[in-house]
Length: 242
Image 1 (cartoon, rainbow, N blue to C red):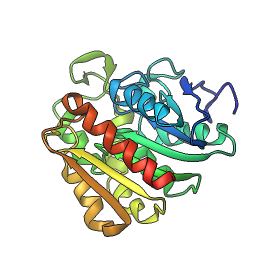
Image 2 (cartoon, one colour):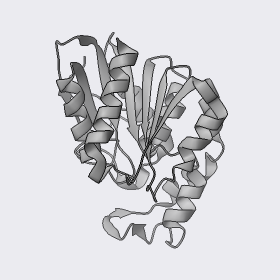
Image 3 (tube, one colour):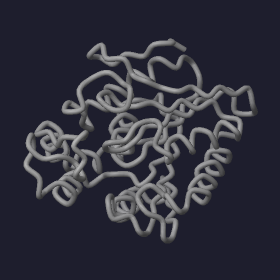
């Protein structure tokens, strides 16, 4: 694969590649994070490591404007994340591709998989689908271009981010119909950031076309339920990539 990955804006995408010549060496698992995150967040980094140990090559990356990737944080949004993921997909060569997205990264995965058959397996961790509801619930009391996300001054709340979440409302759930890859929805029952209903909405819409697992008591990032989260993801991929 290419050693440098750049999106359509020419911005370099920072990533870590964990290579494997194990039983799933013909696969590569891509991992994309959520809002304000990066590839080093435990829900991403720990999952990449666990899958690598299970025999998969794993590539965790930071969306543009996040972590060490180039670009402005203020420009980060779901729609731009799609172009980032497309750049990563184009860079990995002829391997079979599975994609794991956390939170916003899962919404990015839906929109990408709906128009690209390069994603052959997909896992949504606490996946966002009701984007407008998320914007209003989490940031409705902040003024875009003045406030910040979750009181983090390093993560200013941009009007572009809010507009994008509100403009694609309905689009993400509708695009799930076009996802043909085997797909796992994994959510924590105690997630108060992206509500478990988001995954339920997809399951009710697609039925047996998707697998749906709820981890009781787990929060948005599965912090105190990491082993259960890692086991669920690894076991599902092992079965579905075998």
